[in-house]
Length: 326
Image 1 (tube, helix red, strand yellow):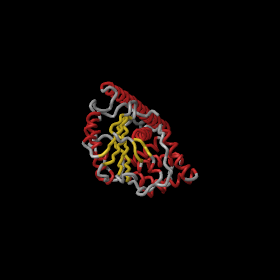
Image 2 (image 1 turned 135 degrees about the vertical axis):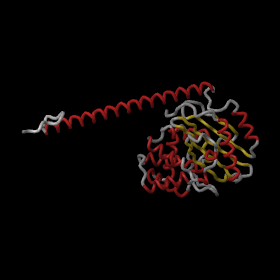
Image 3 (image 1 turned 135 degrees about the horizontal axis):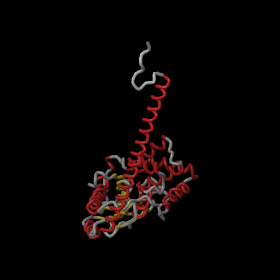
Image 4 (image 1 turned 180 degrees about the horizontal axis):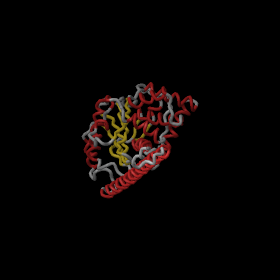
């Protein structure tokens, strides 16, 4: 006598396997549909958050008359300048729509090491954003530690690509033009105390701010290249984390910067400057600060930059509207 088939079974092994395969396929399809639904929900939620952030930023800009700074920023900076034994200057601009604000009497000066970032950006554009291992090491040293030999090595690559000092300088100048700069990159032999031609480029605070603003907005490199350079700027060594690196800004914001300093040929006094970016997502501000201390010392100049960064912290009302437009 044959045994009765189990409950729900036809007793046919082939048919049982087919049913099991069908159930497995059904579960897989249900899981995929559930995953797709969750992904779609996440995308809708992200778009909603982005729209809300834009509305908040727009409302904030409208409430402050379109300014990212306190209404009495001019007066408070004048007080800071009057208390500083030397000349100082600061320029700040939102990454999104909004005007550039400049303060102080010192609005231009030699670029010194702040031009190392434009040099790196130019080489990355020439390399289709794919640096060799050795070039990547030079880039890290030049930006994170302001190493002069590493920056010179990067510039020699440009000389090799473009055909000499003049053409390499013109290439860097061309990239700066993309950010709206009218700066002419220096090619004359550097004076005593300076180590490069390009470091003697006269770079105004407004144009430097425009360059770093364009960099942050992805106008000079693709997303990967932009994030690579910004990552180096955010990883500056502790000894050079003054200015914006000392500011008591919102800890959720990312802060990247590049400093430059050197003795001015005419006065012998150190000019100390820094350009940087304060960001949260697509919102942010670009900043340039310049000082030439009456004492002429580098250390005093750093102290003045720290005080300007503290002033910015006190007077910054927010990061303004989202950027991303070129």
